[in-house]
Amino acid sequence: MREDVNLDNNKLSGLYPEHAPARLELISMDGKTIYSRQLNNNKDRIIISTAAYQSGSYMIVLYHNNRLVASRQLIIN
Image 1: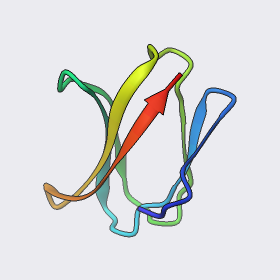
Image 2: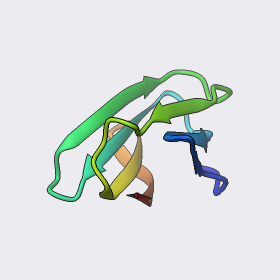
Image 3: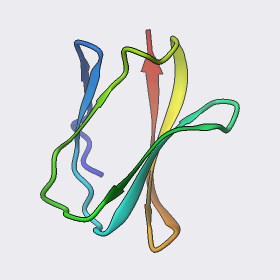
């Protein structure tokens, strides 16, 4: 995942998976997967609306071949 992740207007954007196919997940701090998306093209730009999520800390994780390849913390205010 590239480092230029932005949170603006309740949308998370700027995630570009370098490994495709891959699976992107947004996980709450209690370990629940609250968003999951299969990625089949490493040229896709991913935008996730965060408006429906409660304020707090989350983890963004990227899996390739069922192996964790990247993770980032996300804080929603």
